[in-house]
Figure 1 (tube, rainbow over the protein chains, first blue to last red):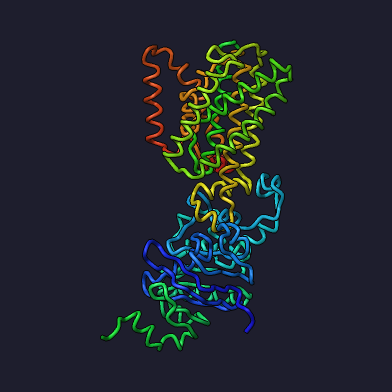
Figure 2 (cartoon, each protein chain N blue to C red; figure 1 turned 30 degrees about the vertical axis):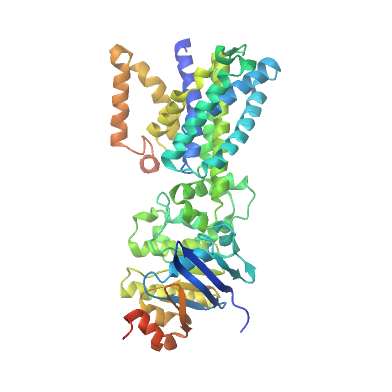
Length: 250
Length: 278
């Protein structure tokens, strides 16, 4: 296998005396959907925060396509090609769906063109926004304030916002939390379509049914330690994973 | 137009620019209670340039705006570490610092003030105020403004979608300071006499008040706020001693009913929609 798109080596992060992540080493191969599972407090979101630069790792390296990301500010990591969504949805309350799709795109224009009204500037940005809006079925909601939409739609707006930037790697933090079975299935179909376009996805999810049916590969975290990895079918029967989730028989 | 009304219009134009200077900084989620300091810099520097160096007013204002903008950027960096009420307190401190600097600056008259500026017309003031307002209304529809809104709404998320939040916040401070300096330069050349007391805490509060009252989510709000703040107390003159109390009551009522100020995007959309329908 060629070098993975995202490579974590020995990533460690502590808060006070608590090891949120202990020497986590993992790789996300290009064009795959990789899941991170584990009980609450296992360090999954912390891992996302370290990858995206929201937290700085105490030690270890994060590489995207061989480029070290450690120490870069979040906006530069985003520009390297990593986009994410949040466990508790973080949309911009004052903005419409359409504005979310414009603002997250990296700009290719000079500063003075960016000061002109949006309609006068880069048409490529609007073409991209329309494309993503259609993909997520948000076209009819274009001018609605994003925060006024139902929960499931807000999650879609968040994913759409992340995708407009044409990331190489998409990080999804519990993309189907709070969704019913049908909604989750729709999201699963969208993710599969995205994988077919060559996008690489790393996701955290508690819905095991969703994870098992979607992911190509899984990592299992428990108390900041990677305890297992492999194809979903292997992980499902791994005794260490069962212990972590169900508690150990003493 | 009588001189009385002309001077009220001049005040409104100067206040509009001051309110816009607060609004631009507020658009990135930062509340500045010290913009009178940037106004003072503009007033003193432009007066020095026109009176002592004989520079024409328009280039003098431009130079003052650039100088204040640079100082605004310098103030913007430490401001990054502060949020909400703490930032408001720090900017208030900066305002008082500038004021006492000019009190103790004999080269520009110290507490005695500075004079010798040539008087300017209301038209000149409104050419600046109106021009800047129109440019700002266009910029409000731009990509840069969306980025500012994103930083205002959720700074962390804005950073994680690839926006340089530091550049956006510091830049807004710089531009806001430049606009306040224009306001100050026009003030100096309208009153033809300035003293440090002109640029105290009350002035900064007036700016914030005009922005909040008129509507802090649109540049147009500052226009409405500035006009109300200048004209309403005058129209309340018949009730004599009670007029400031009445004005204060009106202010509280407006803010109770419309926390976002008199105009906002929803109201504007409603108005344009009705116009299109009829």
